[in-house]
Length: 329
Image 1: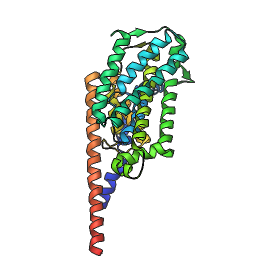
Image 2 (image 1 turned 90 degrees about the vertical axis):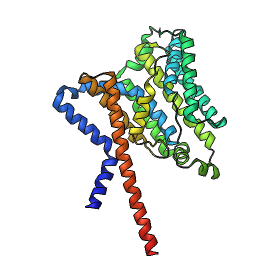
Image 3 (image 1 turned 135 degrees about the vertical axis):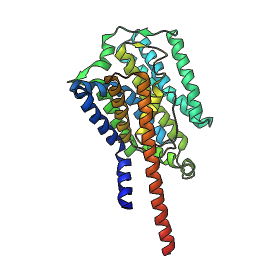
């Protein structure tokens, strides 16, 4: 019986997000059957895709044990840069300049953390304010707009019935998954998150890897900002102000430990889908703002509780095995 209970908890821990999504789907099937129309499902995934790109970009950095609280401000600033650029040059130049701007912002974050040895939470809290201040300066604290249909089509075009932003989201997921599984940077992210000092003693160039992870996060955030500005044909320093909590919630719900070293792209995709499903379901049922945040918080707490219980049980199992080995020895 004890073994069966442990197995059940392990299965629950490994598939907790799938189980929660199935529960939500069951509730919606009873109270809002129309929720599962093709259009609503596509709209839900389309809605979460831009924030999902930010979450995926942040994943390897958090697996490495670092934070980037500035992704929302990077999103807002890159969006402003792209709108200003498209009003003077071509849409292609605006997309390129806006997306590339994330390299420099990510590089700034990485250099502050690696060279000045400032905690990433504090460092990016500071740059978050700096980047937003630059965005306000560029926009003169007002929303700026563009009338370029070609620029807008970059974010609102469709591939068949699939919005192009879903294609971008899937592409970013595949690229970061490939980095995490098949490159030195991906392997180093897990190693650094597990034990950064051991990595240094083994000769791993930790600072270079951390710098690259911050750049990856910055590029994904800036690309998301370009998509958002293109989609709504506007930009403001206020864009992205509240996105950081949703992004971090998606990553943590997806199984990335706050201490680093653990997590997967597939798990984070599940976390993103769950957050998007909850947001869409609450809106569909007539709940707004406060309730969306409330339900996301409850879900996050439930997932963390399941994780704590499962980790404690697994630790006890390891301790018992070690004790048995000692007794036999």
